[in-house]
Length: 339
Image 1 (spheres, helix red, strand yellow):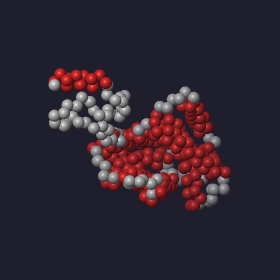
Image 2 (image 1 turned 120 degrees about the horizontal axis):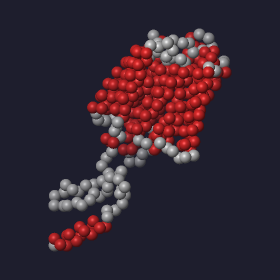
Image 3 (image 1 turned 30 degrees about the vertical axis):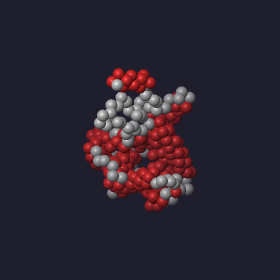
Image 4 (image 1 turned 45 degrees about the vertical axis):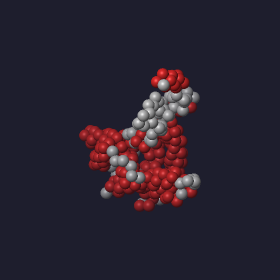
């Protein structure tokens, strides 16, 4: 029952986040249609979306206090699939076959995750967090993570490597610390409300600082990735990397799969795979459908023969250049011969 409460909080939180994203997008579209658009932060509708997002993230935060990381982290696919469904009715976007298939696969994955996630109930007190924090497994994990993070950061900053895998791996490494600290802070708050006060222990504030710092740097690297690559590429890759990193962190720090059967682990991983595939299908080629034609084609005008488009495709190398002068000279000489 405690795990079910955490699952419901996570699902409702992610659905509220998807609603807030669509509200913010709708406010941007409304402002773009105005003759003299005002800044988006002056829109009441946009701030309503921001408040709803804060409510959804609060639900996600509280969910970690009632259920394991390996159960809550994969449920993030609900915000992606829910946003696709809501955008069909709210923003009148097209419903594609891949959206239906992706949503079905994501729901099937969530069903397997909820039923085959580790069924452990542990009270997250300050002493429990301290015990896990100084454990040799976590210390080895942190040392390896710091080494990998420093190598990738050196490649990114010094060598100028800006591949999406490098940027989102940096995000995922920070995300593992985020979910560990979020569960610790949320669990200690929950323990304080139900049993004994835990907020007087120094480990609570250490975990709180780790949570805030890791979130800030995650946003920084994630913003760099969204500036360099399309959202349809960043969203599924980031979801896969984040979820994988969170699951590994939960297994190592909180020992959530301790004593689990092989079949349970296999079905759980298969549920994760279905949710990953569902997110990929929902986000695939979504932006390309909204691109409008960037040129005027006179090829269908009767009696007129058009040798080239007024403006080439925006993705081609000739975008923004004038047609070749030799083509225009040939067309003029051909007209003179006809005359």
